[in-house]
Length: 136
Image 1 (spheres, helix red, strand yellow):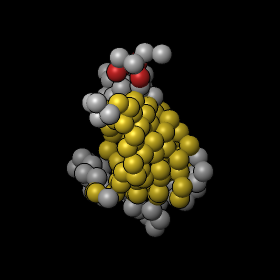
Image 2 (cartoon, one colour; image 1 turned 90 degrees about the horizontal axis):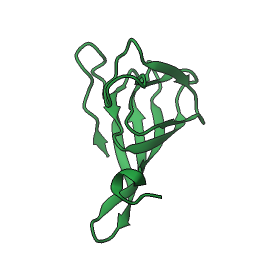
Image 3 (cartoon, helix red, strand yellow; image 1 turned 90 degrees about the vertical axis):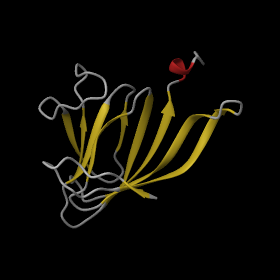
Image 4 (spheres, helix red, strand yellow; image 1 turned 180 degrees about the vertical axis):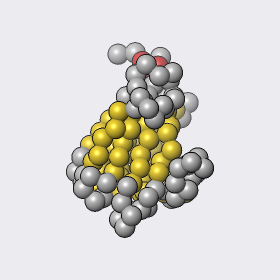
């Protein structure tokens, strides 16, 4: 498990922790990652700063949080790839057992609004085969 970097000075300086459970390689000759999974822990008031998933899709499952305390923000589709404009982002408040997907070429941000309870999520990141020359 490793600590995530903290957010910009204007946001919370409380970072989360992330761990990788396993990596499945698509081809043993080049060791390219086809699928990766793990977990994310956001402490109270913790923020996972905006990040792009690049050519991959990422799927999250909320395992633990206070209902309505975990915010996920998706970048507006017309923003340049990998950027997050807080004024145009779509935001949702989540509860345990909720799932969400970040599509390829999109950015997202997570924030735990609880002051007392950490959020625990699992995630799966899957390479988009069409960008790797594997075409369907």
